[in-house]
Amino acid sequence: MAEDAVTGRCNCGAVSWRIAGSPLAVAACHCTNCRAQSGAAFSVNIVAKSREVTVDGPITTFEDKATASGQPVLRQFCGQCGSPIQSVITANPAVVAIKAGTADEPGNYAPTIHVWTQSKLPWVDIPDNVPSFARDVG
Image (tube, rainbow, N blue to C red; front, side, top):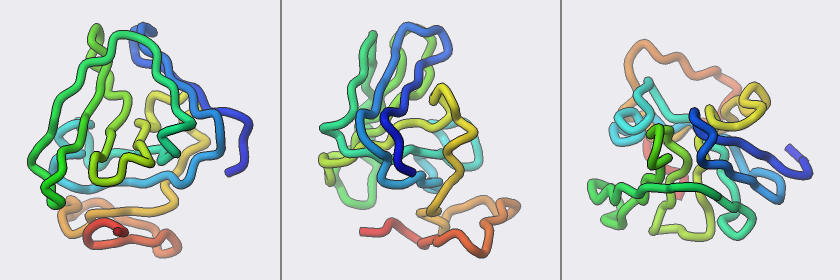
């Protein structure tokens, strides 16, 4: 996944983001909270080092306290159009999860790992060659 930079933006264009380095992984999260936040069967996230991510624009934060770790997840979205932008996992602040659907080239980011599969929807099929974990990988 070596790249110079990954870029993206919200639906209305008011918020843009950039990852200066190579993503660490692309994770599909099947937890109940990510499903609700994404409005889909799972959330696809470009996992990156937080120090390599910049976000510009009117970000609004929802502090999701209903987590397994007891540490909140800061779910950040565009304050104008509501597009989800990133999740900041306060239990591991060195990384952030950027929403892959907001990438300028989202087709480049197929999941390389699936997490929280214990709560995946029964009709979701995970490819046999992609690692998956019942909970998280921590």
